[in-house]
Image 1 (cartoon, helix red, strand yellow):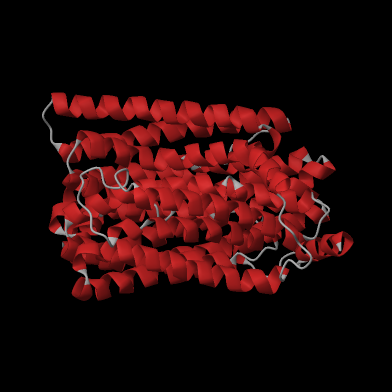
Image 2: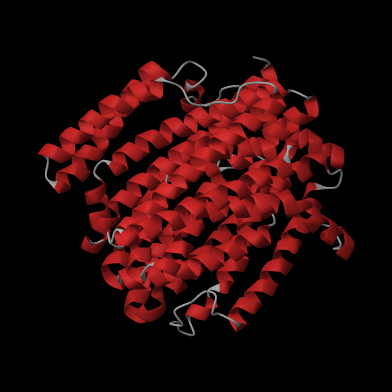
Length: 506
C-alpha cells in the first residue's frame, strides 16, 4: 500500500472514530426524546409530527441540491478561493430554502394531511432553512477533515436541544411542543456549524454573487440532488405510504422504531463527506484500485459496527420499544427489519460515494429503480396484511421488510456497477461477520429467555455487544482494520495537502 493510500485510510479511520463517538452522543440525546414524546405527547401526536417531518425533510433535501457530496468535488477542482465556492453554495441553498419555506408556510396542508395543526406548527418551515444551510456548512468542514463539527452539531447539540425543548414545551405549549422543539434544535445546530465554518474558511472577501454562476451551479448539482433525494426517499416513503393506508397510531409506532434504527445509520452517512475528498483526489490520479479498496474498507467497518448494534437492539427489541411506551411494543417486528436494513444498505451507501463522481446518471437510475421496487413491495405487503386482517402493526413490519429488500437490491447493483467501472471487486462483506453474529445471537437468546425485561436492557445489551465485539476483533479484524482504533496513524498529510491546494488558489 502506497504512502498516499495509508494517509487516506488514516483519514477515514479518524472520521470513523469520531463518528462512533457521535453515535454514542446521539443515542444519549435521542432516546430521552423518544421516551418523552411517546409517554407524554402520545402516539397519535407523534404520528402527526412524523407525517409533517416527511415533507419538511424532503424540502430540505431538495434545497441542499446534492452539496453534501458535490461540494467536495467543486472545492477540489474550482480554481477560486474556497470561501467563495462555499459562499456560492450557501447562497443557492438559502434562496431555495427561503422560497419553499414561505410557500409551505402559506399553504401548510402538505405537512398536515389530517388538517389538524396550530399556528405554532405552521412555523415548521423555518427548520427547512436551518437544516439545509447546516448540511452545506458541515460538508464544507468535512472537506477540511473536520468531522468533529458534524458530531457537535448533529449528535450533541441537535438531539439534546430537541429533548430539552420537548420537556419545556410540555409545560408551556404542549399542543405544539414537538414541532417547536424540532425548530429550536435545527437553529441550534446551524449556529454550532457556522462558527467553525467561519473560523476555517474566513469571510468571502471580494466575493460577489452572480445569477448566471449560481444558476449554472444549480444545474450541475441536479444529478447529485436527484440521487440524494431518492436515497432519502427510501427512508421516508414507508412512513408516507403507512400514513396513506393506516392510522396515525401505526405511523407513530413505526416512526419510533425508525428513530431507534436510524441511530446506527449515522455511522455510515457521516463517512460520506470523508470519502468525498479522498475519492476525488484518487480519481484525479487515476488510482481506481485504491478507490475500490477504500470503499471495501469503509464498508466493512460500517457493516461490522452496524451488525453488532442491530443485534443488541433487535434481540431485546420488545424491551427497547417498551421504554418509549407500552403501545409501542407492537413495533418490535418493524424495528428488527429496519435494523437489518441498515446493515444491508452499507454497501450501497459507500459504493454511491464513488458512483456520484464516475457514473452519476447510472447511479440515479439504480436509485430510482430501488425506490420503485420499495414502493411496489410496501404497497403489496400492506395490501396483503389488510387482506389477512392482521392489523396495522403487521403493516408496519411489512413496510420495514420492503425497505430491507429494496436496499439489499441497491447494495448488490451499486457494488457490481462500481466494481465494473473501477475494474476491481467491490464487496465489503466478510465471512467472519457470521462467526461473530452466531455466538452473539446465542447470548441474546439466553438473555431474553432467562432474564426479566429490565435486566435484558441493563445487562443483556452490553453482553451481546461484548460477545460480538470480542469475536469480530479476534476473528474478523486484521491489521488494516485495527487502524480504526489507533490514533496518529499516517499523520495528517491530507490536511496539509488541502492547505497547499488552498495556497495555490490564493
